[in-house]
Amino acid sequence: MTELDQISDLEILVADFRRASVADDATSAVRILMEDVVSDPQSIHDIVPESFPNDMLLYEDESISIWHCRFVPGQTTPPHDHQVTAIIGIYQGTECNDLYEMYSGISLRKTDEIILSAGGVLEMSPSTIHAVSCVSIEPCCGIHVYLGRLTVVERSIFDLDNGCVLPYTEEDYYRIMNAD
Figure (spheres, rainbow, N blue to C red):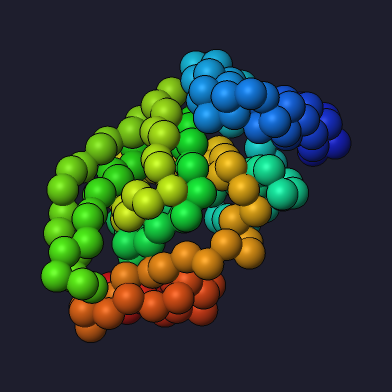
């Protein structure tokens, strides 16, 4: 498959998610579509160019943000929230989502751990706080769909080492992640 064919297939995938995002029950429509999409992980793997950076915004408008995300083995993100519903589908590798809740104002407590492998889907509410780790020997790749314009939402990132909550910025995200 040529890169041009891959881009064309990705445009179709984006259009499908855009249609689902404006359905009466957008969360269910996007989740059902995501489950269908990642039920054949190889088909997604085949349409994503290897040249994609680790985090690539595929499309965004007021109703939806669609990202392709790749986490390398051993990589762990800092805990963060999205403030919009998130639906993640994994097509390669395995990731661990550590879920947290706030207590005592700004402290976090781990409440759960969800392991997702190729074909797995995770739906998170806007208030979910999570950290992601790639726990496979190969990169963990997925399609992340957010029901809103993720790039302008006021979100939080949690610096566990310093015990503080910060407004989410890409700079702090990578600074905290690379400190580990």
